[in-house]
Length: 295
Image (tube, rainbow, N blue to C red; front, side, top):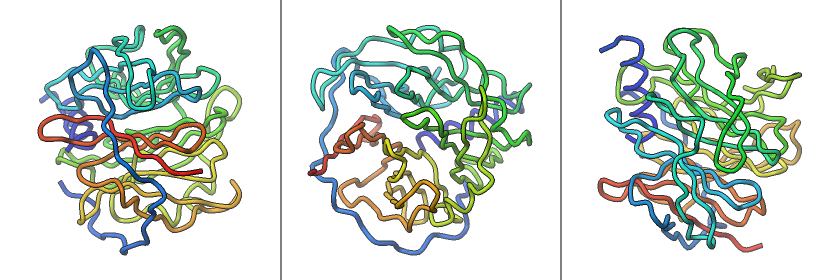
């Protein structure tokens, strides 16, 4: 089950030592055909699983993690751009990986790097970390502590930092040891001093996004007026798009991206809004794909 399966099983193992999706499916929504032409991304020098892609704001790097299978040490990797569908593998990101899960990378335009790790969940009930990325290395790693609900089995398993570093989009998940979370909804926090605080109106801003199905893996445009995310419901996996006119307004009802089909998750948008990358399962392997839209 990709990201959700791995996180669920990992948290069960972390807490015990040793699925049911949301019961109500969302109504069938409209479709968005602005993106087209799915193309598989080649990472030269790398042949393993590539999941949770993130394209840096300058377009230079592709961040990703390897397999999310519970039997694998999930780590963060990076590759450098050759062209829109070709990258050269540069190895694991230094300074960030441990013997437990590190995944779901994101970074603002100033090099502030964010990721998910289960390294301290037993002690802190928190999973979101940050540091500074430069030259393939992350330094100054610290916990983003104020996002956690500090409740056992409640886990923040996804994130996206906005381009300007002022907004953090993340997911509240409830886990019970089954293959997928019991619930998963997107939330928004804003920078407050050196940390982040949940927006008091986060639920209202996302009232058209979150449902009884599972919503996760959000990404936003540079102006935060366009939101992409993954939804897992009775009809399977799909990637959706929603827009709003100002950042003070709720996102509108989302549209499913018709060009993206199959076991697909984790969209990431380029700074110009022209390319959307995501991962897709092909047989036993997860690979990264790209779709494009006209200006």
